[in-house]
Length: 146
Image (cartoon, rainbow, N blue to C red):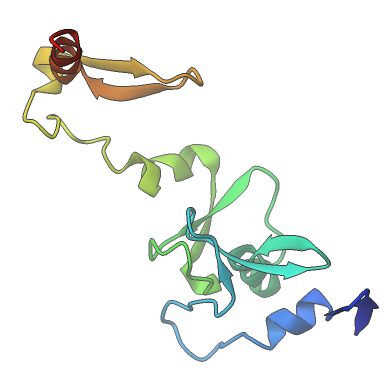
């Protein structure tokens, strides 16, 4: 065990191995830190965070090639069971991810048809997002009437 200051640092593999459960094919929930916004599980060692699902995959199948993402087949970002991870390139990964869950929608939440009313929006970072033009006009009209 390595000692720095008042903290003890076990080697990463030793910490990881102590928590592996290879018996089940169910989702494995990491008992340690889970990022509150992204939902991914992390392990910290020597002041560095490591994604647990990547470590589990690499331990079982070898290194993940550069430019390849690991897709959670179970759709649980906290799951670190290597049997639930599929290596895919970023182009393949994006449409399956939770980020694009609204791609197939044809109407906004207020019922406006995107094809008839149109949509477009560019956020301050320059990314184009879907925003209903009819809803946009309504909100601008409400602000102007104040």
